[in-house]
Amino acid sequence: GVQTCALPIFQISSPLRLGGGETHVLQLTESLRELGHDVLLAGRKGGAVKPEAEFPFRNALDVSTVLGLRSLIKRGHFDIVHAHVARDYPLAVAASWGLPVKLVLTRHLLFPVKAPFLYGRVDGWIAPTTQILKTLAPMKPKASAVIPNWVDLRRFSFEPHASHAPLHLGLLGSFGAEVDAQTLLTRVSQCMPYLDGGRLFANACSRLRSEEHTSELQS
Image (cartoon, rainbow, N blue to C red):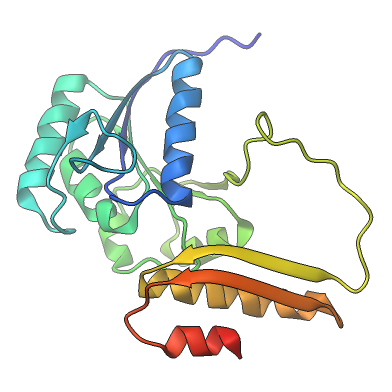
């Protein structure tokens, strides 16, 4: 087999609720450890990724979290710091500033990154799709790549079949924050040209601040 050099890797993921991104972080951590890498997870107390290192993560400017992360990065002699959630990006940048570590950020959203001037320090960006990768281009990242994180094929088998005509597409899931609802609506609008007489079925559990997105989805 391919021989890999074991790396100390610091993963940062603060959400409290388990979603697709957090499931990916857990699977990524498990796979990296299986390959022999030393991975430490940081997040909030009671967080979705069950972090070994806990910090407040009050907001994107939480100084106490930055200082705690920075201290841990120094003590752990990590080679890579990897953050997965937009509100954690500034904290990861500040905590690793001036330290001899590679900073990697994974972008899960279709929308452009806010305050891109903050991210000149970032060594690499990861996007799960080519569409998301294109939103990173204006920042002129040092390095960027598409790494899908959709389905673990070791656990879920897949056998392609001939396309149905017309195509019927179903969406099942939940969304709560405004940005999540907007992401779903964007995806739906992207799918419509491919239906060609088919039908779209969407069943989503909504906890929205307003009824705007729900009515738009129903339309």
